[in-house]
Amino acid sequence: MQFIDLGAQYRALKAEIDANIQTVLNSAQFIGGPQVAELEENLAAFVGRKHCITCANGTDALQIAYMIAGVGPGDAVFCPDMTFISSTEPAKMFGAASVFCDITRDTYNLSPESLERQIQAVLAEGTLTPKVVVAVDILGNPCDYDAILPICEKYGLFLIEDAAQSFGASYKGKRCCSFGQIATTSFFPAKPLGCYGDGGAIFTDDDQVDKLCRSICVHGKGPGGKYDNVRVGVNSRLDTLQAAVLLPKLNALGSYEIDARQAVAARYNAAFSGRFIIPFVADNCVSAWAQYALLAENTAQRNQIIAHLTEKSIPNMIYYPTPQHALPVFQNEPCYTETFDAANYYCAHTFSLPMHPYLDAEQQQMIIDAVLEAL
Image 1 (cartoon, rainbow, N blue to C red):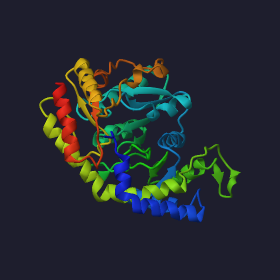
Image 2: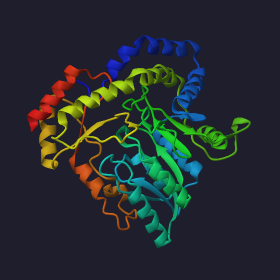
Image 3: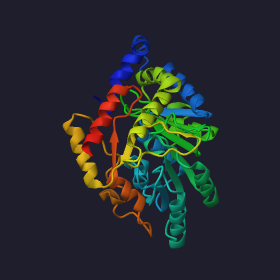
Image 4: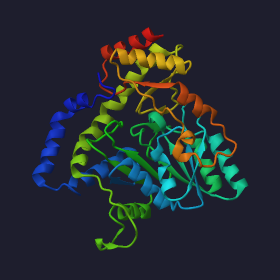
């Protein structure tokens, strides 16, 4: 049994993926082939944004977004305390401060109330300039953008949507990657839309931002091409082979995989409701279910369940064991008065079960039975 069964997905899409890879091999256009432009067009249409710029990975996508926002020394970047380090890693790289905010107790996403408290704390102290908010759609579940967007507008903050885990999800009829001045996603193999290596993408509706992203992705190229360098950039391109793999995967995601993920989540919810805190998805929202995370009664119960699952050879994970403010790399970042109660609670109680669109009912019942046995 696999935690995320990429082999099952490959078998379902083998003919299309193999044919696309062979086309690239025959053409020998391994960088910048036509499949890259086709994928960018399809991704933008899927999300509902004007522009999509593919790049080498999701962390690069975030770093480029930070560069577009002009993040630098003396700036404050606001980010949820429960996420992966890449969400705010570029702030550290560019000399800015990462100001973590607590999460909500239901969706585990950025708490709008904590965000505003932290913005006001930064303003009151007066040593940092509030600059950017990074809203992370954690575990594939969209943030509360109706609450977050007005806060960003009120304080003049640049909003980046980190949709690394939420591609295919939607918030009140709008697909994830359609929020903020810039949105980013990851095509790491385990993501809802994953390639066979590393890959990422940036989304925007702004023509100038589109041009800047494309320039930065290729060493700050100017109108004259890659030897006409007009700014400092990076080397971050999606390989043609990865685009060829992603094209049929994108079609499958929209055609049936997101629906299949809902069915898997519904079976888990029915089995575990009343026994654990099960994931919450707000009304008129659809999660991409990048992970299925339960909250145990306490850390001891979680450890007992994990030990039993491991003994039964059932894969399991913890997303994530440590809140960002507690990581050694961020020990000197400003916390102000936040105590991160919700993030600390989540990290001490969470564990995740196998989740993918090819998880059949029989396999899933084995997982459910093993969890209940552990109780």
